[in-house]
Image (cartoon, rainbow, N blue to C red):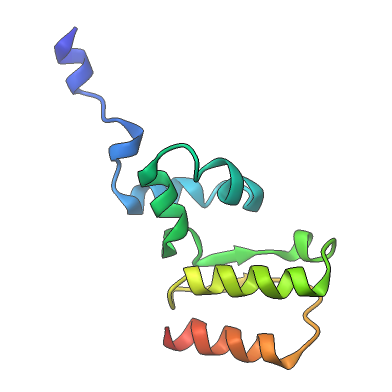
Length: 108
C-alpha cells in the first residue's frame, strides 16, 4: 500500500507553474473565490502571476459598474507582475485605467 501512495503527489505539492496551467482553465469567479481557501500553496499560486497572463473580463465587465471594473483590473493586472499577454474587456471609461494597464503590463 505504501508503494502505491509514493507514486502519487499531493495536489498542494505541485510546482506553481503546473498549478497555474491547471488553474487557467477555471472561471474568474473560481480563481478568486474557490481556489484561495483550499490551501496555502493554491492561494499563493492564485495571488501570483501564474494565473494572470491572459485575463478575460469581457463577460463580467458587461455586468459590473465602472468603479468595480477599474478596481478588478488594478488587482489582476498587478497580480500579472508584467507577464500579461492578453486582456479581454469591455466598457473601459477613462484614460487613467488605460495608463495603469500599460504601465503595469510593460514595466512591472
